[in-house]
Image (cartoon, rainbow over all chains, first blue to last red; front, side, top):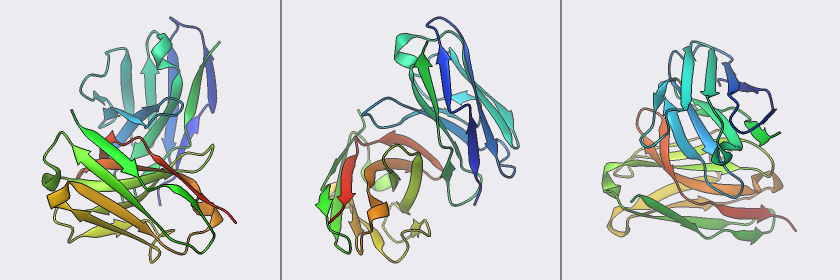
Length: 107
Length: 118
């Protein structure tokens, strides 16, 4: 199975600042990497696929990059609604696997 | 608007069984694969199972293979997760999700808590 490792576990950011989240795969997943956002008590929300393509309705302040084993999610200017846990997921090979999440909290 | 509503969670003893249901609306249910994903308390997400549009093809993660069974009823726009021989480590919030054949989960239900405890 492909193991997805996210860092850092927690990121403390002030509103209006940017945030950079990392995701590493234990083997190449090409560009088959997605990101999800989860707020407390809510289901995950689909954000980005193919490493860098925003899903419908996702604001432009969210951007993704990377390929192979190293990926990044960047939030350019954090809004109050962006404080949440973010998960990466590979869909290059079965079984589909997720990272353990990065919590973006308000500083 | 796509909606997925999970029901059937609750408390069950180790070794017991439980059946989760997911009711879908807002899209043509019979045209999509569907999935179950769970999240143990304080943990990340774990994909569990997929089912093809017509129910003829199913896939499971190894940790639930032989114990969990996914099924669907396209006439009722619903799909199900039958969970048998439950263990304490199956305690989690269980989500249903619409699955894109590429490997993505584009819409999620609100989740149902399953607690396995004596």
